[in-house]
Figure (tube, helix red, strand yellow):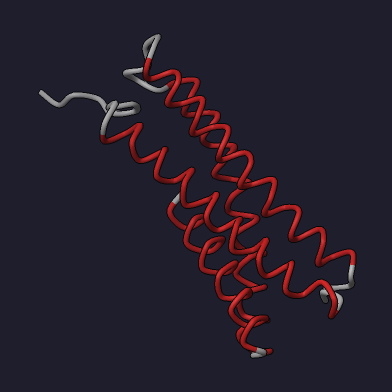
Length: 136
């Protein structure tokens, strides 16, 4: 999960900065990280579903609500990231000049969604002990 988050969030923010600052190399580098992040996010979502089906410590109530909230935001963030990849792909790897600022804003929002999903995921482990087994 950590690589997926690092690639996707840093890529989205770097590509957005490249667009907004008019730095082509920064934009291209960020776009590459977004693509790597998209692949890693797909794997993270898949492994998240596997973990949810076998997570020790999962009980009815608060933990399930927290897991559902994390899952919804993770899927929303992953879908939004996929939308940016498709958007750019439909333009042959380029964003139309009149769409560039909106695209950059969407990238920033995607980064925020993914960070929020990660925070919720961290709370599952550190506050609710989901997926953690007691040693002893």
